[in-house]
Image (cartoon, rainbow, N blue to C red; front, side, top):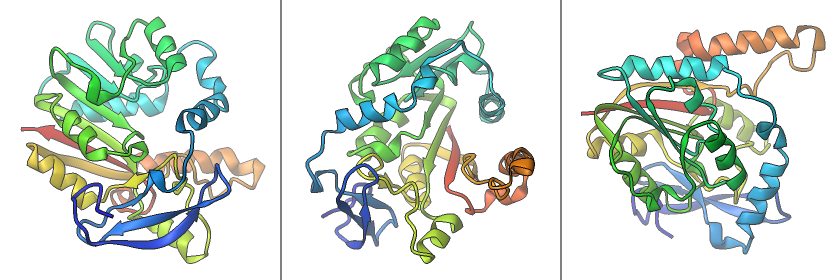
Length: 280
């Protein structure tokens, strides 16, 4: 076994994790060279297409209703604009689903998405977006982009190094690359491990890898990118008052404020890691 991210053979089987989708376990491997971790997709024979179809079917609400702007994506567009060297005129979102994030950008700029799901791609196209229904590595783009984004995609990939190589080629000089991934290098995951529970991000074979901060920065740094900012969020999946209906909404609001505005979000407390890079 070699590391998916650095090719090192200093890889150890550190624990077994039961799949939330199937009645068997996967070995979790950790690289002593770059601190990344991953599961082996081929440890068990599974039908991934069927699994993802079932997961998508359980979230049918994303296909219903008309587009409505959200505070989450509005904030995200503002963060990205703050790191761009000039006002963006083109945006590429990889794993765009129904195009909600792209819809938060002005209609007079080029808005392009990459999406594998037929149903999601059809919704995005109906919204006037340019959609490539294919694997990123197989798409031939005519030009590079001022902004390239990738939210909650890398952890699903069997060959993340090839994906990152392609992603880094699509950003214009002075442009921004924004990546969000789950990170196991956080206090939340460590506390969950300490009490013997399963971290919800450990869900093989849906989530396959967890690149370390060090290795992500190293890979992109070698491609000419400089880290501008990084923060950690709860992803809306933690509410200390969630069990108390009267104050549950207040707790959710407090967590939202903490996620976006508290200086503690620079510390790896929670497990949603947002990284913003500028291409030199």
